Length: 148
Image (tube, rainbow, N blue to C red):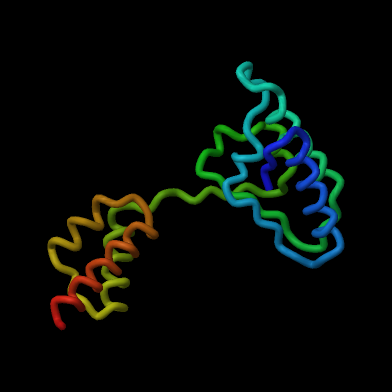
């Protein structure tokens, strides 16, 4: 999506939205902050500002027969005007330690491994479900290799 030359990203955005306007689809911008950073950075040559403006224009003009979804782990870095182009903002809070422990227990049961003290301690240091799932998978892999 992001081009190396001036104006290339705006062209890519235009092409993407032209396609999406003619196709039932879900358009997902994962890590929208790569395209929608807050404008006005004095160290920028202006291209990033132009990208944000192009994105907002495409969002305004598009008539996508589906959904446009954007994700970000850095909502504070997004341009305020970009937020207004979306009908709904949903925030997902990080899971609590209790939720992490329960998720680890469920995942361990799926892999048919015990929820050992070591596994509990490891997972409680983690911050999200993806990290917990990977830790449980690693524990299951180790258990399987020990059983060979």
